[in-house]
Image (tube, rainbow over the protein chains, first blue to last red):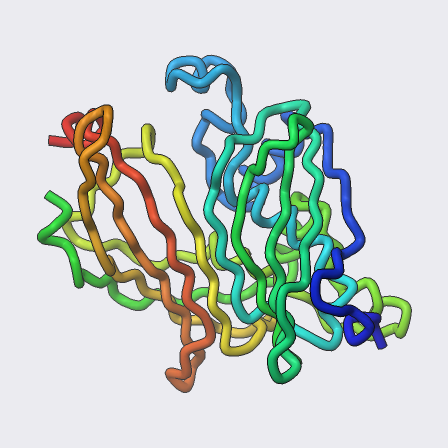
Length: 133
Length: 144
């Protein structure tokens, strides 16, 4: 049995410092996801697109964020995962991931997402709702 | 040019959830393939990451010509009725739900909302994956 039932409103999940983001992280995700847009892997393509450097796939950030919820996925599943991308993630960034429990309704746990880069800028915002399996 | 596509749908495409693809996808995101708790309990149910449908083929919408470059991914929303399992067949299709343009500093910015739906062999909806893509005026003019 995991410790989800012990959480109370406004509690934070065990945080995770993710990174520094490497080019290899993004190459691996390109291969695994089939998203080969070169702005995520090749400097010249990113520059031609007017970016200061290669940027992480939004979906790489969204997927990586899931890790902090894995300890709870034996009793629950992700019923809703909604995000808005707010700032781009670059190579060498370090992202701080956590989540705040905002509500518990009939065994469903609703979290507000917290994902900040090393300058404490939010890289995504949104929510996750866990439902009992 | 996108206004006319609201309501357009693709035909259903069969996708099989393969263990190898889930393992590779999870590894690329540094995700375990089991819940951390269930590994300790020696359970073997594999977790398919909530964002895994990003790898599914949802078919093509006729006359939708999105450029490969210059799009901005604004939002992504997943809704599940139940988790996905290894080995199951999912039938996916895409629908254009909405398109609007808002005036901005760099001209009219377009917001395209498209959703991929996934159902099981009995036609029960398992998940939906909604994404909002932002298309600048400059990028749209490049398509014309």
